[in-house]
Length: 187
Image (cartoon, rainbow, N blue to C red; front, side, top):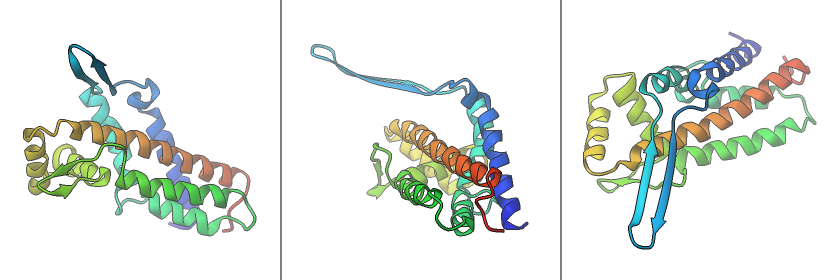
């Protein structure tokens, strides 16, 4: 595939992600943290339908897996290198890259397990490769120990990562689509 084909494929996969019921219906994940002066703190989590989430992850994982053709960093690099000079999109892409790096490291919910910091990227890897799609026994065991060890927030961390990463995946998709439609890339 050439660079233009990579960008076109990315735009196609972004549309596929948008077409998933979980995205279309904004169904699923909700959380709230409440404080009552007498009853104390309560947390409420609503996770999405398991089949909707699994369906969404089939496409989503392609954007975060380095071996996939539409891996976010690969497409970002192609788009950045191929953009014609003096386009405002380069500055936007620089911001997107900075935000992407932050989303991989932090999402507002810090997790430590067995003295190891579990970044959102690590948590996503545990869920995707240890639970949903692959049979990585080590990752599954780590995830199971974390869940059994009272780290219920590990699901929240995963969902927050999906939400934040999706936002940036879609934004890059918008830049790619706009650049392709308006001949802003050098091929």
